[in-house]
Length: 474
Image (cartoon, rainbow, N blue to C red; front, top):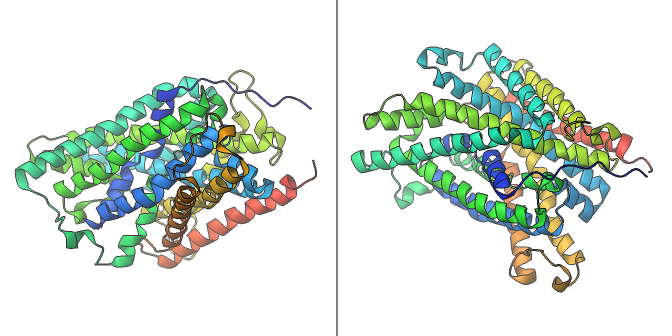
């Protein structure tokens, strides 16, 4: 039997920290959540407590226990067998085909802001959005064929481009508060959702999703130096920084501006522009828009490379055609998986923008909302496997003394079940809330038909593919 293809170990601790921050932090989630006002802070804290902490604990233990390539796919396969491993890996991969276009649409909107007000009329232009998104997808595909070593510069630039807008937001929020007071009330009663309760609470799905993705480094475990130690440490460092950005950033937006003045796809740049304008500094909105666009492109690039390792691992396991396991002869990257990913992401984006399922044209904003929620829906299915896998693999591991180097969830069996139970329940609730249409949806039937129909099609395609290929006798 031929030896499995070998990947190069080129990633150190700070490479993984920056990849995590660039891949996980989405300042667009601050703008999305801030539209509901002060209750967003309560929802952020609940998402941090009930979803992020269990997720971080599970990833730290499982990545130190099983640091092999494939992450959640490999853990689910080890815990529950090849069928469940395949379904988990399929959803883990396919969600990115919706995620890439949605993140690039965010980048497209902020790029316009960087060039001034005269170009903002293109914000909802389908052809501008299409050209930008397709160019971004294939740029990321090309860069990832070159490998992680060649794209470190973009991850580090994305890291800087994420931090500067966040710090500007926090700085001008603080200055606006000191100068004018808060534009939003944070009294105890105002922190509890009351008006339009279900629309407000439904944003919790996006907040949980905003904390997801720390397992990205585990997708590429065989390319990380000393992965058993490096990945858990990077998760802890990056997790603290991400939590600070989300909660401090959201508070700053609401201190500086009333919630009803925000537009999601350009809201952070608008917030910096308006808040800085209140204290006599003009033009920072354009700078922020440009930085946000770079950060979104870097985030897309991070996930493009990380996600391609899932079908690569499935190809190695012979759960997908062997072509997915091929490495580029020069760059040692899974170029076939990367190319297929680019083709499918492009096709899904074009269908979302130009195809209407239930009558009426789909606007760019509606296409964005549909892709965001399809991303969350398909991405959370693997988390329904992650938390039970934590329990299953801990139970199967034997005595703690036989696990050198493993970082375990503290608290023994009670701590383990508390973490796994909280994470599983938070994931299930977030999944259910996705089906509530976002505020301002013009065609609710088209929205629901797209979300339910495309999700069913994607899940069904995964099951069919497995039984046609993955279930064949070896």
